[in-house]
Length: 99
Image (cartoon, rainbow, N blue to C red):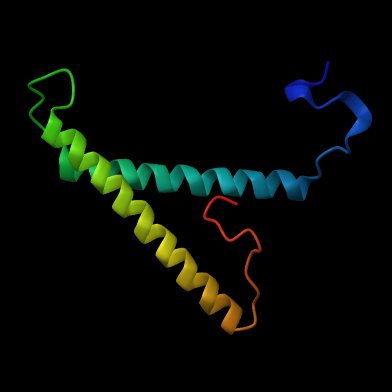
């Protein structure tokens, strides 16, 4: 049985360019996640941990922070895509941040 249900030799082997692209995408996603955690943790969670769980205020703050982070990230991505298309560079047809 092939790893991850690949089905053996019925699928072509991934070439180094595909592996490199997947690795770069994973690095970008990890970077976005780390920036999100850093920004929202700093903003919403006190450094004095008095309780083992988030309180209601922290939870609401985190929800809003994450929503705003992704909304801004999407707007920046759209603007960068528009700039890339207008300059003739051509943007990714996927249209999304993650592919």
